[in-house]
Length: 295
Image 1: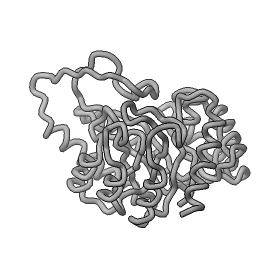
Image 2 (image 1 turned 135 degrees about the vertical axis):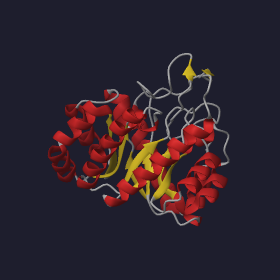
Image 3 (image 1 turned 90 degrees about the vertical axis):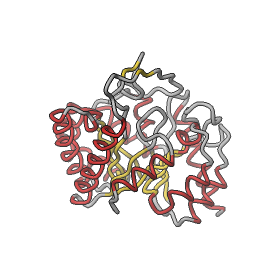
């Protein structure tokens, strides 16, 4: 298993999304912290166009720094919209993102399941900022049918898996607290209904632990469908993304179980919204390296 720097570090320091100038600066900091692999995000059309327009600069920067971009995360919630035109536009943007992900040499492109089209009293999770420990109260509109939304989600994820495969990438979906696919069993249903060998999961320890999942059992359920791992800690009550060892997650057992199912991919240190984040990132990387070296 190898270690990467998740994009939450960059969001925490520079906002959502960061400018291209801050993106380049962030890659320099990522290398300085001792990481040789990282993610990148593209949040909305404007940011995606900035990434595409600066793809040569980004590729040269990370190449000169000895950092490999392994995962790209395009963020387009309309990709699961009931509105066909909005969904079509988001799909076109995903296609553009897959092209640039391939150009940057990524292994995977990531998709979220987003929030279903129900009425929310307050902010929708992760819409305008990455904030954890949110309380979401939703009202179901008259006429809403979960089956209809699930059909849209399955169709869209299957289409994205095909586009990813065409570009030499694997598609991974991240179950997150407060979204349409938020736990292990929902992810298993999505995998079953999409039925694509090119679809897998981002195994996010913080989100699943906050869902009261038994993480080792989740790994055993998902097995070879784990395409990527996000690693951060919490107390199992809120989906905080703390440094490794700062919560209640049994990291030795997590690594052991990942090894048992044959996982050999990247583990992204996914810490955010914490003070002195560089210190926490370095200490978490060292913490994980020590466990990996002992196994």
